[in-house]
Image (cartoon, rainbow, N blue to C red; front, top):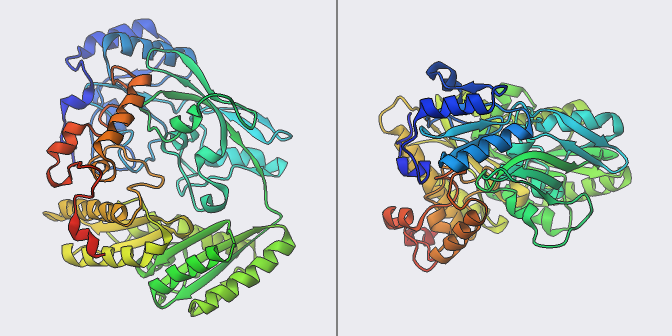
Length: 499
């Protein structure tokens, strides 16, 4: 499907002469690969949200910071929009290019510049894969904690842009909690350092502001990450439930007891069956829900906490509780969860992956709401959660070749996000807003809040050239969106109050 093009998204100046821009950049940066032939641009038409496709005007592939600075200075001087892209694994259309803009691909920035085992830090370029950091740190008994399911492919620069999480973020935090310093280049080519290798730095916390800004404030050219010591011991409990509400209650009981697992994940029956058929992890395919609870730390503490969690799971109504017998089985348990998305892709021609966050206490109500929406629109939904922190990933199954199913899938997705807001949650936990959820921003934030967001954007990028049309909607867009208009912060869907 081709995304409906709106030239207003291309920034203030959109009547660009492509041939002239290509000539200028080839003269300015003769050593930087510049793709502009139509067949060379096709691979960059989308990110992980592959339902929407836009062919960029041209693709730049720098490998030095000087090249990035020169390109951005040129774009600023000529009013040419720029979209930065990492590995392209994002799931919200954040790296979706522009028909009349430059796609700045940072994949060639792929070196680990320094790894200091004594300080517990690594200084890396933005194109370095998430998993590659842990692989480089492993000989020193260290690792990088945030572990998105796409960690084998996603880049650290993209992780910063989206504030990525993962199955272990409950205990170890998101990207923002695991980086110390970043180097960025602004739209006018200025190089800035945000953060510090010290524990704290004076002034406003611009590092936290920039993390999760989805390429709207600047381009990341270097990241300094924290490395942690590998836990002495890690054990996983798998618990089966005959009712998904009981599994949700078990999550609350574990957290309420003061146990902070390394990971606490939930899957419903549809996701369980898909993952088991794909990975053969040993999942109970007749269970309505399963929980994976990993306890890590010192051996004695792990043993004690495992016994406490097992008692809590049993009291919550678990029909079966299994402790991974060895490291191989522990890895298989996690492989099933981390491969839930591709596993669901094997049982449906297409699926639409949502990302919303809710208070844990609202889990049962939201699942009931999702089931009602599934029945109403006639499409199955497989549910996968970072249950410990309330981050949900409903996977809406559909067939894009069947008339109307794509539209119904998008409608269900939008209503799920609105439901998350209705119960006090958020429209995203780790995938970002991008182009996909920009309308739902109008449900979550009021007009005053959106004005502040635009003010921050203008402070870094006054002409709106970096990743325009993403993340933060204009007030005009919210007004045009009809019933999802902004009105004093009130949720515009009163019917959701019944959930």
